[in-house]
Image (spheres, each protein chain N blue to C red):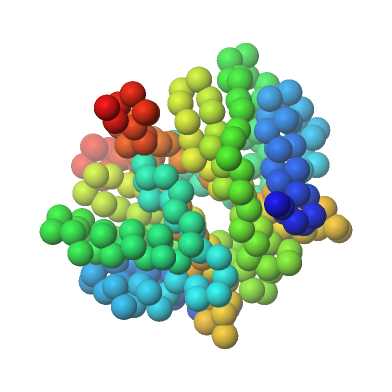
Amino acid sequence: MKTPVEEKVLAANASFYEFFAQRDLAGMERLWAARAPVSCMHPGWELLRGREAVLDSWHAILTAEDAPPIRFARANAHFLSQEVALVFCDEFLPAGRLLVTNTFVLEDGEWKLVHHQASQTRPETAPPSPRDVN
Amino acid sequence: MKTPVEEKVLAANASFYEFFAQRDLAGMERLWAARAPVSCMHPGWELLRGREAVLDSWHAILTAEDAPPIRFARANAHFLSQEVALVFCDEFLPAGRLLVTNTFVLEDGEWKLVHHQASQTRPETAPPSPRDVN
């Protein structure tokens, strides 16, 4: 059973993947915090700091011809204060599964993204698919 | 020029690597938050949630016979509030360089670690060295 505030930050996390999947750059721009300092670690990239660098990276990713399909699963939140939350989830891309932390802050009553870090998982540690279990 | 509060959170981050390098499990236990929910993503591992799971993992890492030497560089902090900060840095292990976010909260006036995420970097995406540019 999730609390209303958990539901709200998990909805913000879900909207991140919706904007990603739908190549919605305007939605992505609204989702990232306007005042808090933002940062991003795409898998294999260097650290990006500041709204301009982070949104430039999303512009490049979302407008690329080979922009990958994406989905997420197993999202859970840890609240560090009433205004800061970490959301953990799995991200599924054609290249494999990533382990992600999305960090949110409350700005004007809405949960806004301040940091996204996606870490590669080792293929050998992935849970077996139902077919593999047989 | 760093502010006193930046110096303090960066000192907490430095102590994390000192405890790691010196296999100081008691120091590591003190550094992790006692009340805020803690979590950890070691490179290639699954998400660990809760103080017991996280400290068990550090016990296993720090007491392993092949515990690797470690150092860090380029630490920088982003403050999300007066009580929550993200510290970004590079981690150097024999297996390569990792890109890290260490998340800290203020508990009883001290910066305590609540989340550690280390992401593998791609060797081929490393910035070219001056020699390669020629």
